[in-house]
Amino acid sequence: MQPTLQRRVSVITGGCGGMGIACAREFGKSHDLILADVSADRLADTGARLRDEGYSIRAAVAGDIADAKTVAAIGDAIDAHGPLGVVIHAAGISSGMADWHTILRTNALGTALLLDALEARLVPGTVCVLIASIAGHLAPADPEVDAILAAPSADGLRRMESHLQRLAAMMTDGKSFAYSGLSGPAYGVSKRAMIRAAAARAPAWARKGARIVSLSPGLIWTPMGRFEVDHGEAAGDLLKETPIQRWGTPMDISQAAAFLASDAASFITGTDLRIDGGMVPFRLSENS
Image (cartoon, rainbow, N blue to C red; front, side, top):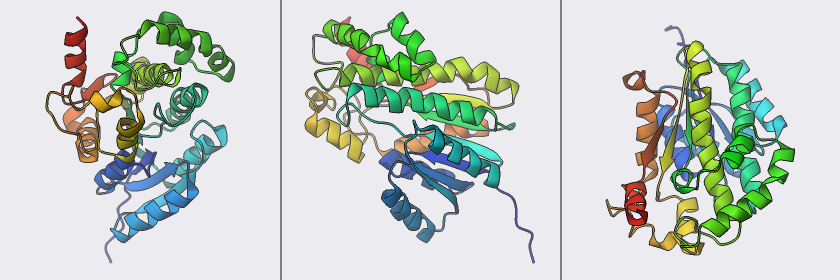
């Protein structure tokens, strides 16, 4: 009888979304999977579908990524089934899905809690890919906002409303954010915080032989992406502003993540890769 080889685990947060499922299929070819998602029902359905396709699901964690109990459960699953190979952090909330505070709490605080938990479990070769957004590149740089979101806390998030109001007033062209009010600025700065988190944590991760990067999708054909285009005030123009003139696909994201997590990218850490069909350069040239 052949011995069973121990495979590393790959943690996929937001594992029931379009990009999460694509990444689960990509990394499930070489890793056992730990899936996390806010919806227990969707998690059960997705896990059953992936098992039917032949993937190994070692654990499924349902809960809010900004809840310490959920993050602790993810850590426990890694301890039980590791060592830790790859983390794809795709959990997040977009502009049209919630109020500004929930967006910041999920995208910024949830990311910080997850990364804090992962750092105790890093082993040589671990790679984390944070799924950010081009909104993080288009959001105005604000030192006060960056400082709050560099170490997000419940108290800090409560102080963000006045900052977001100021940012919203700055953006009068209607092109940088898909929604009026504060949800658009909140989404942009929360994704900027994810990009900055990869850069800030990279040196400490490198000392443990691990890497952390982010990638920033543009217009991607997922349920969340289609919702934003259907309901956003400015998002409907995004395809016109994408020079490659097509939607991105979840596979575009999963294949880029696979490269970033591979040995071919072993000298890449602390940086962000835009996967946007050229939208950010187009926007910057239009505004220059």
